[in-house]
Length: 357
Ligand SMILES: NC(=O)c1ccc[n+]([C@@H]2O[C@H](COP(=O)([O-])OP(=O)(O)OC[C@H]3O[C@@H](n4cnc5c(N)ncnc54)[C@H](O)[C@@H]3O)[C@@H](O)[C@H]2O)c1
Image (cartoon, rainbow, N blue to C red; front, side, top):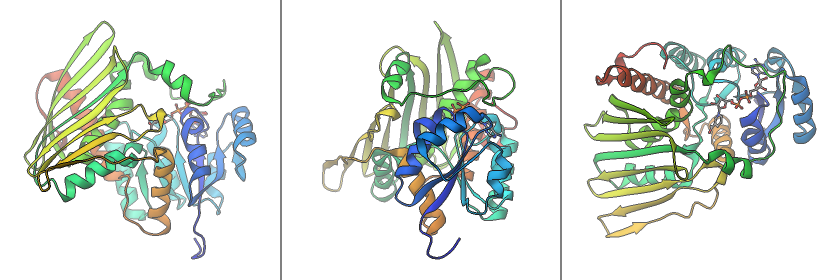
């Protein structure tokens, strides 16, 4: 990449739901990135998205996009099962990678991606965009710089029975194609797995972002009237305790947030459904001056901010603000531990887990 180039040329793999709702626009709005290319095997969808978003290139073949020397980085926005194989190919082609969450579906393949990130020295970021929520980022800064030692953390992520009414009202019309490539079988055939991968990945990443490394998880799962509730007691590496609540679906509005208790202060946060593009309401109480601090967080475009953070890490060598490959692996280990513990009723150490959710 030349010295003068300050804009990251991004190729997006997958023109499906998340690209249409988030990544295409995020790349177009980003101050330091460009939607340079898009790629999808479904050529009808590719054509429609090309007409709407006007990238410079459109590819039906991923290898052809990877062979384009003008593509600096790839956003991997395809089904979970395809993330790691396609991310590895991007790294082999010398491209930086922003891979959607969950980074992988097994511990082993996620380890492979971590190794490849290390050996190639390329940037691998995981698309847990909540790290770019200004409220959550403010909470993290307070925790790291002012709160002192952590005592305990609670975090909850509860999807709502009404979420599709809400997202349908907020998102653009999503175009679909009969020719879209999907993994074998129905991912929703096993809803426990589907929910842990889709939603548990966010919960674990936010808990780790705020509370640090998680060492052990003990989970109880209750299923009633079509709803699933995973209550997990977790032990953090620093000796503090945590409680994580993953409930799908609550009979009320979207319900997500966190509380953190520390030595010199505490943090309380309420997170909104992401499609509102509204930063979390966060209050940090500091014992130092006996006051609450509450950021406005007026820029709630987490997906655009995520691409900008990714581009800064690549173009300027800025510290990564997003989740890196190690964070992605830790979240996968956390999800596997949660699933195993729910099956056995035993506490599970994250360092011991193998296989998939
Ligand atoms: N960060 C978030 O909050 C968030 C929200 C929703 C979805 N996601 C994640 O985004 C990912 C994608 O989900 P989606 O709902 O957009 O999927 P989707 O199935 O709607 O779209 C994926 C598209 O990729 C294409 N594709 C797959 N493999 C390809 C290949 N090898 N070459 C070319 N094209 C290929 C398919 O044809 C399809 O059009 C999932 O991992 C999901 O977990 C993240």
